[in-house]
Length: 330
Image 1 (cartoon, helix red, strand yellow):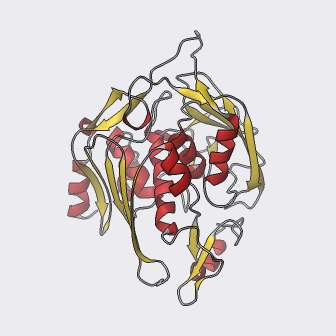
Image 2: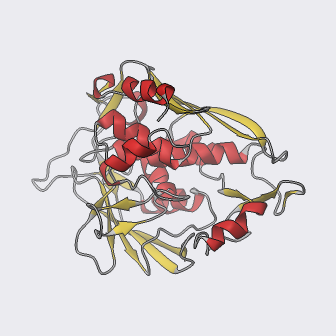
Image 3: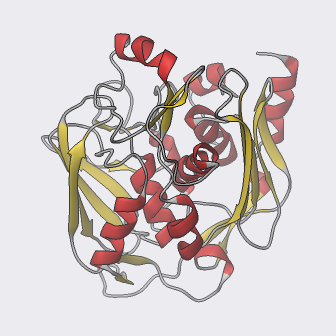
């Protein structure tokens, strides 16, 4: 690991944040929430290509968000301690080490739940160990959550629990080469994200800035679809990945020919999708039904799932040997 990366790791510490009594996105007094009804969606898994179903079920306050994979008894909590540091092209959660149950491609669903305030939810996964990709965005998850509705969650004693949120107190960052994630103190959630694809002119360098609340997320972030580079598809499929990927659930861009399946939903749709992923990954800081995304200004550049989750692991102190080896991986 380079000396600059080592300095970055030392700058990310648990003292940088604390839990504050607040509801999502800076207002006070709101209890933890859950769904008002059960809702499910089915579709293809991005990497397996299998037909999978995810069923979202209301649960008690304080239980948080967790997954139950068909055929497994143990739940997989949507917490950063369960994030696999070597997961490829998605965020994977696994309970324990080695052969524990896992669930893949959780980021789009978690992104929608975090942004819309689904704090406690049991997600049953059948047909495989992946969340369905749907159209490659979080828009269908937003629609599903809104169709079910939200209500105040009660614990097993019938009591509401106040929702807490992590608040950043001092600047912290994690960096490798020119890729980084940084968090700065702020009175509300702000996100600035940059990407750069110099070999793909149709994408190029993009930056997008946004505040975060349910309405902004639903209209400006959730519709942004995942994307890939056409010239990289054969290599990814040769590695057993993206078996379920298609022009119907991902934007595909050629280095020389531009977008193969226009039109884009936004001029800067790739950058907006990276923010969608960031929100899903940062939701993993949540514990016991509290907010995951920190009250802070998050600035990220050329960061992917590994850097997102490694940043959170160092911030929370839940660091594995693999994460030390991969710290700062873009």
